[in-house]
Image: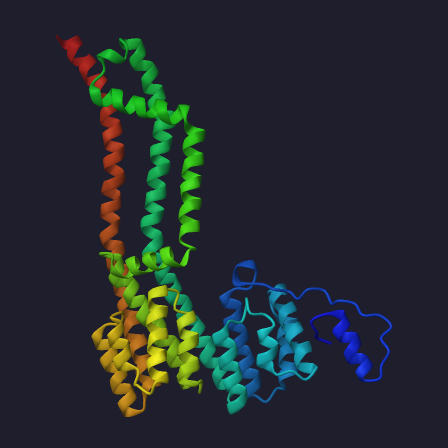
Length: 383
């Protein structure tokens, strides 16, 4: 029995003319997210297979039992068994999914609920599988757009740390034997001073770097600061246009999937706003929802936000006028997913030589600084 406290359970049982012998709290539910063992791949396989079973007339409980027994992920199997048990007790499938919000998000649960009401659960499951696959592709594109420059920067810092900590000190000893630091060129003395400072204060530098990283992480959790960061991501040169296209693609794909599955537009807009991943986009969608609630169309409020490109808004307006908004949204999503592919490839092509020049320049300056005294000594020997 589900209740807020043992006392409530005892009261309910007594109301049913039952005398409880012992009331004991059930162990905590398994709460897993994708990062702790349940992957998007597991979710896609489950929805595809379950859709096939439902379409073939397999009872819902029996389908869950089969999938929980043959799945490769034991953690996901445990969740499916819990869902099966809840359905067997009389709960709906969507209610059972709500018990595991870290695995089945709001969009997934709402689409399943719409499928149950409309009697098209197999169609909804196939649509969900397709949506998750495209969402994963888009997520990979976001990582590609942001991870490459960050990765190159980390490599550059590691190279600099190795040269300052190990390479330069070996040259320093050799230069000291040749005549001391006073005879070295200014660039060499500067690099050696940087190396000594790095070695002598390595622990302090590491602590400060960690503190800066933690401070940035904490600051980005503050709504006001996070909003500034999210707005910067949409307008910063080079990366901004890519992030804007990703935001449009995510918005149109999610909203199109929800509307084509029978979810009411205001409820769908609320789900899309939470799934946008960007506070500026979320606020724009919420503002549009408020205008729709007042009786306006979607296109005009979207244009007023200034977040979505005019072409996208005009196509949405056409979709509203023709009564095919869900189809139009999916077409926009298809177009922008291709645009994101091209944009990410262009961004990578642009950043790759720039980052190589950056790393090569730093390493080159250090090497020149180390070889200048050798050239100077060779010239003196020649004279």
